[in-house]
Image (cartoon, rainbow, N blue to C red; front, side):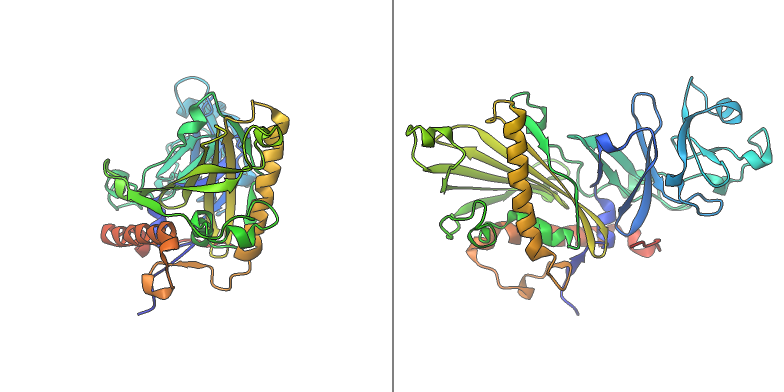
Amino acid sequence: MAPLELPNTHPALRYCWHPVARSADVGDRPVRVVLLGEPWVLARFAEDGGLAAFPDRCPHRMAPLSLGSVEVAEGVAAAVVSGGPRRVLRCAYHGWCFAAEGRCVEIPALGPGSAHIPPKAHLRAAAGVAERHGMVFLRPLAPEPGQPGTEELAPLAALPDVEEAHDPAFMAGDLPVLRARASAGLLADNFLDMAHFPFVHAATFGAEEPVVAPMTVERAASGPFGRWTFTSVSEHPFLHREDPGVADGVRPLVQRRRVTYRVHAPFHLVLRLDFLDAGGTNVIGFFLQPETEDRTRIYSTLWRDDVGHDPERMRNAVDFELKVVEEDLAVQEAYDVLSLPLDPAAEVHTRADRTTLELRRMLAELVEAAAVAGGPARRPTASVR
C-alpha cells in the first residue's frame, strides 16, 4: 500500500471549510472560484450582503453561471420570490433565474408562470458559505438527491475565526492574494516550520540561531471540533530590528519573543508573535485554498497592535511579509510531488518538527474520520485546471 498522502483534491477536504475569496472582492457581480478541482459561483443575494454559493454551471446547458448577473427580481421571478425586493442570479446564456436557495424561479423561454419548471432545474447549494475576518469561506459538501441531509454530513472541522481581528487595538493589513503551483498541505507545513528560517529567509529575518527552541504542542481538549485544532507555543531570543527602542539605546537588539501557532484543520493557520521586552503583538494569518491538484491560492493578513494605526507602517509591514512569502514560494513551487505525506515513516522527523508532525497527525485523523463518514469519495466531480 502506498504511503498515505494528502493531495489538494482529497475527498476528505470536502468536509471542511476553505477560504475562497476576500469579502471585498465579492460585490454586485457573481464571482467564480475553484475549490478542490471544482468551479463554484459566489453571489450576494440579500440587500444586507448575504452570500450563496453554487456549482458554477447552469443545469440547462452547463454554461458558467459566473458569466451571468445578480438582479433585483422583476416580472415572473418577482412573483415567485416573495418577501419584498429580492435578488436572483440570472444565467447569461438563456436567462434562467435562480433564487438564493438555488430554486429556479424563471425560464424565459417558457413564458409566465412556474408550473412548468422541472425539478432538475434547481441548483444544489453549497453545504455552507460564511464570512469571517474579511474572508469568504465555503464548505462544498452537500447531499445529492436521495442522499442523507446536510445535517447528517456535518463538517468535521469548525469554521474558525481570528480573535485579534475583533480587537480595536489591532490594525489589519492584507497581503495581495497569491496563486502558486504548490500543495496546500506543504504550504501549511512550511508556515509552521521554524527550522528553515535561517536558510530560506536569510535576506529578510532569518539571520538568527538555527536551533529551534523547545515547544509545547497541545490539541484542543474541549468542544465538538477540538480534535481538529492544536496550539504550539515556544519562546526564544530574536533580533528585534523593528523596535525603535533599539535605535534609541533603550533596549538591546536581542530580545525575547513568544511564538504561538494556532492551527485549525485543514489549512487555517495563525501565528501570534508577542514581543516580551518591547511589548506589542504581531499576528499573521495564513489561509489556504486548494484549487486544483497543483494550484493553491494564498490569503494572508497581518493584525498588529504595535504600529500605532499608522497606514504607512502597516504598508511597510505588509511589503516585508510579502517578501517572506515569496522566499518560501521559491522553495515550495520547486517541489516535484505536490502532496503532504501523512505517514510518519515517509519522512525523517526530529524533535524540531513537533509542530509539523502534529499537523500530519491531525490531518491523517481527518482523512480517517471522513472515510468512516463516507459519501464524498463515492461521488464523481467535475474537475478543472
